[in-house]
Length: 228
Image (cartoon, rainbow, N blue to C red; front, side, top):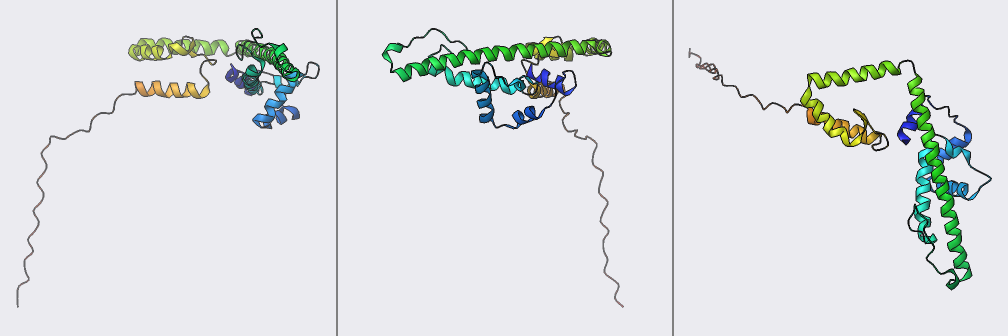
């Protein structure tokens, strides 16, 4: 999904302005960016709205996942994605330790809320891209050409067509279309190269000529010069 969103932003299908604040977030180190995401999760009134930018959405989600993984043990959570019941006896803990557990659980809930928000925004972007692609004048023509190419491949090269479909089926969103939420751009390219290599004909063995070799011309005999 993030690949599709970033592609849609680069192709103008999402109207996203590159502000100074967005450039600043893109330039942050992983630790500094994660700290920004943590501060955004803690603050309910002062949000960092630039995190919703299409080019920051993937990085925002990665930072949220990291924060959840880091906080879950401190909060006594069931997992990084599920808070679960509190199993610690807070009365048996020192006051400061008990408050640390409660604060960690409160922060983990905030991270989960931001993660749900990230997912919701990503789906909205993906739907917008799909709708605008379908509204393009050449979208129908592109789909027609795509369908014709599939039928021609199936009719003229049935073994190759069956092999391609068999290899791509686990990763397809629809016949012949890879699901961008399953494979990223690099993985799709690697899979394409691998399938094409499997379809390439094996190199022919070197041809051994059966024509008898022509006799080599005789080396002329060098005669000594006549003595005078």
